Image (cartoon, rainbow, N blue to C red; front, top):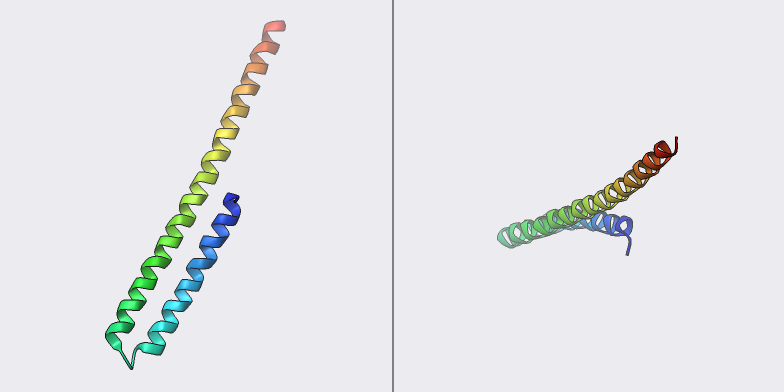
Length: 87
């Protein structure tokens, strides 16, 4: 799975969890306030974890792109040195 798909999945999952936490809180707050609070906080913690995973996937994507750019720069620098040596 590509990092872009992974990022989108984590992003959408976090939004769904936020909506779910809101729904659980609204539905259960009058019948069982303690359960409502506990479930809401648990769902919110999982939503925050999803956002953390999303940011980690983004960071990995940026690191891979950075490594690719560094390799290209080294290659171009070597070509430039070779070309300067011919002159």
